[in-house]
Image (cartoon, rainbow, N blue to C red; front, side, top):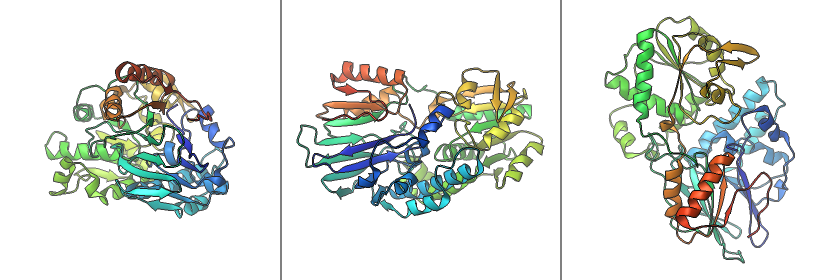
Length: 439
């Protein structure tokens, strides 16, 4: 599955560290897994290493404290700032929702006190493990982890956890950093069975905005608050600057979490690619005429009373929650509405249902007939496709063993076959939940 990422790595001497502790998102069946007992003694972990700030990689971190964990949680500085926002937002949503509360705001605050930061390229020593963070190019601060175990008594002494690898070249981030050497790799496979389309996502965004400018309708863009929202704002900034989108067309950023995340992005200019570095020399990379930052829920509702063309960027990215659902309920029955899907949609999510052509869906108990125009661009995905995953893997010398994770079964199988065909590696594991592998 593409959610709930978490791995326990135990050294030859018996010391254990945790890599990621993500929340399960998607269908009710998946979300129930968040409340299942953890098949590991979390109190005995020496440390936690976090790849990035998406909820499916960090969302269960507060549960560590509930289970007696007393160590530190290591990540890059941008990830630290973004995870704080993510956990507080998660606790707030849980308090306001109908689900059992996984953890409180107070526990999230105590978890943040455990955070420690490490820069890209710097080595962190924890017991027999030496951990180095590399730029994964996925979102701001995202990392791949190189971990060397000096107590390993097998031929596998260095293992790499890819985290989520970026779709380089990204709109904002630097290219994914390549790893020179490793004995084993745990690699994501979100798009392990396909290639991203070659089209320019800017063209798709422009086409959809121009369409509602002509019809007077609304363009709904469900987005993740971290990175995808910032990418869209940066794109639209350029489109307005170049006169391709009207300055008077309002663009509503309807996500308090996205607003906070955008402020974090501005604090780390050195983490952006060379294109964005050039933009920073002449002005704000996320601001433009017509941008409206929406605050309270009442202000979100008021958007529906504004006539004329508009763009509404709101979470969540898979339409599983957040303010996008209210906008979808109101606007999807209208033929003048356009819905643009700009990211991965997991199985059983509302976004996936709509993307697969459902003409009637249930949103918060209401049956909604879809008359809106549905568009999709995978070119904006922040995940590497099959070819990009293979380029990353081929660069790694001495590779003996591969674990394929963070993907649905068909993409995992396809990537496994590709690795064997092109790299000649046959020692490939497609693990399932709670499986233990010794090597």
